[in-house]
Length: 315
Image (cartoon, rainbow, N blue to C red):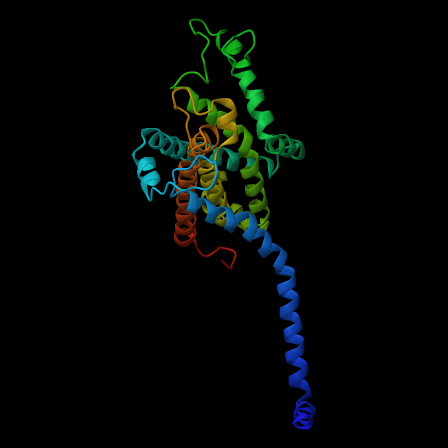
């Protein structure tokens, strides 16, 4: 029998060599991917699975969860008016980001990506806020928003206008969300500007020159050449902006802790408040699962609906 196998291998040397090479190739790929799979399971799959499990219990973190409540935590979340406020604030941040932050980033990218003198300097200045820690950003703006005009820059400028009084930017229920959005825009517009700059680099200069030769002015060039060819970059920027808005936490928590009177509550601060301040781990886990589902549904739906062919080929 052994001699027959030996003869078979001898008759098909190419086949044996090919299979052996393929097996080694697959083994090599598996070994390279194994650390990533292990880390993904430990830090993504396992925590999510445990959160799903805890979300069905009324549990405060002491001992094993035993008080099974089923879907009661989720029902309570959907009925809570504070969570409704958190959803509305999240949608407000998304709307302002798409209508103000991204157009501002696109305009600055077009400005510093073309013929502006000293554009390298402006690129560095505009991108700098993104590399600064969110904690440092929050503390710095808390100083700028200080209601005392002798300490807060914004109020010091505001009282120079006759008849205008200093404002409690972070203590006023009507002003707190616009004030937070100013900080969010300052912090993240550099990231989107960098994405748009990368997209502009991919637009062939010959296309713009041909349009100019045909008589297109600056606005027509922007409307019919630049923006359509930036389609994939704009879609990516919108995707990151919406996901970032849904998961916003650090700046809001440090600057307002969701106040005053929950006026600046967002989903992440709501989850943190119940999970790690009040130690309602079961309820907090349920909030985390709701956030995950919202982000997951948005991601899948957005990627399926918005996918479009590229003007420069490919998808």
